[in-house]
Amino acid sequence: MKPTELSAKPYLTPNEVAAWMMVSPITVRGWAQKGLLQAEVTPGGHRRFRREEVERFARQWNPAGNKGPMRILIADDDPAVVGFLKEWLEDERFNTRVETAFDGFEAGLKVHSFVPDVVLLDVMMPGLKGTEVCRQIKQMPGNADLRVIGLTGHLSPDTERALLDAGAECCLTKPVDMPRLLQQLGLDA
Amino acid sequence: MKPTELSAKPYLTPNEVAAWMMVSPITVRGWAQKGLLQAEVTPGGHRRFRREEVERFARQWNPAGNKGPMRILIADDDPAVVGFLKEWLEDERFNTRVETAFDGFEAGLKVHSFVPDVVLLDVMMPGLKGTEVCRQIKQMPGNADLRVIGLTGHLSPDTERALLDAGAECCLTKPVDMPRLLQQLGLDA
DNA sequence: AAACAATTGGGTAATTGGGGTA
DNA sequence: GATGTCCCAATTACCCAATTGT
Image 1 (cartoon, rainbow over the protein chains, first blue to last red):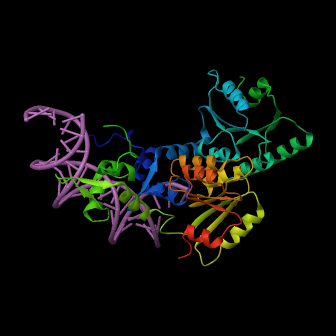
Image 2: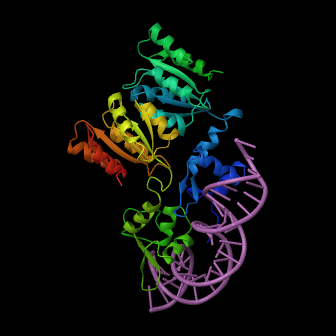
Image 3: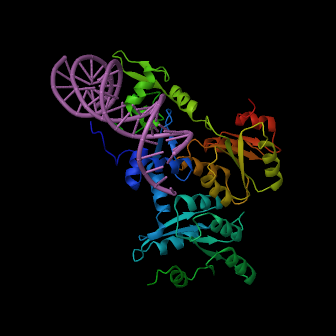
């Protein structure tokens, strides 16, 4: 029997995480205790880390020197809009990773699990206030650099100002002018 | 052998239990030897574990923590309901930490940032489908043990069944019968 | 039925893990 | 903020013979 098919196990021990992150096991323990890194617990009280969670954590603590694909989260309740944007943005010419959210809850979850660089946010999603969402994102420690681009059908000067005040980078109208969006994202180079 | 038709078989082998509990088979053997985990025995002396028994054993060590306050996230767009629940649940007699979310996005964020043991979820929040939210929570790595208790004004058998299927623990009607809720949470002991 | 690979049990030694504190 | 150390419990590795499933 092969003792270590490390890539096969769906979970990692603290030691394995420590080795991967090039830190001491004690540090990993600290992360877990502070809730920064989510852990499962064996009946005996030892921690086990799911691979996905470790990867998420690694991404989160990385963005300092980040290279790699631009991570884009599209949050809109209209599947047509989402599909359209996703189609454009996943073009092979760009170096992007695209994730979608069709309601506010999913968007909130994925801000943490996907750790996007940019959020394309429908500011008129049912049950949500775009400005509030924007403010909440920016308010979270570590998310200050997360870019937010608002999308809306009817853009009044008031709502736009409110959005920008809340920390949004800009606000575009639907239907989306893709060249404009690509330029804003910096994908037109 | 097939990957895992875990939910089909009535009993589990030591290896399967080990994978489930994120532990090595040897550890499972240890649990069985100490009598912590009850086992059947084949004619040849190999152990077989009944599903119910393994679940019992797993829950014995996990449920809402043997240590620390119970972390409760209240997700409801009605400030009156939230305030009422928060007031009750923060009673000093209980060992609780209560956090609130007034829309789906905030709820999604706080599932990760607050890391609740239980979510009290208004299943009729604007822009949200309670069953979807529930499913998304359960689907996330590490959140399998997160309890979800639905709250709704009008509880139809259909919506209740859908919620339970999605992984909710139960569904209560508003106005909330607090003794009932406390009992469900396990705070009435 | 017979062969074969994978799994399991038993026992002991070695390693790892958690918590608290420096 | 990350790490070292101590104590003690939980988990794992390694030995080989027996059982299981195909």
